Length: 283
Image (cartoon, rainbow, N blue to C red; front, side, top):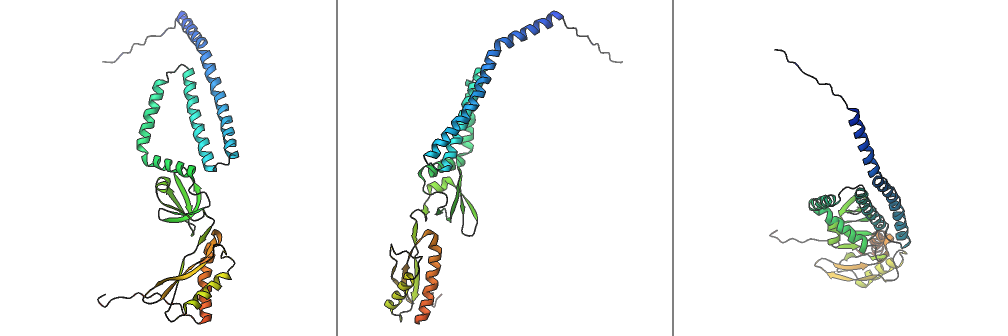
């Protein structure tokens, strides 16, 4: 059997069309003040947020705040004002905001629970920016690495090592651990050990080292360098050599002191005692 479809022709009643059109116009007229006021608030709010952001940045720059802190606080303020503007905008449109705020709170809780590690790094970044245990350009040692601080971000701190490797250290562990800042005081002391044999005249060796340090213009006069007996081992007399140098000259002073002491000892006939590791017969 064939199937038959009966299609009824829809007819529009002119009176119904007129009624729908009038209802739409009435709704539009009644709702237009809210719509217009909401968009006025939106455009004025966007302009005001930009203006406030620029003013806040200028104030913080004039107060010589850290650039990282300035950018971070400006971004936080910018997003907070945008959220408030959005809530005000939809509220003026007549949309209930209580449920929307509840959804935002639930989303914030879920994100906070899933990003506990990131929040820890965020809090650590805030502590570093506020209390400034180091700044960009400082050489620090932390979490088993040594490097120059290239950038302090919100979640990580970027270090550049002496061999030009980039290391990202999480701010959470960085702020809770021990930080050695080699640049904070402006100058450093090099701790060197030179071993000589027991046949060597200690005073003569110390005088030679003192003369070497005195002739190096990179070694600071104040604080004065120190040369003293550090230890008497079974195979050698260990002399502690402690010159002071500015941070930028530290590496050069360290290397030049060793090289110049070796050359001066050779000229004076003093032999540097090599390190000797003794083993028992059982070993």
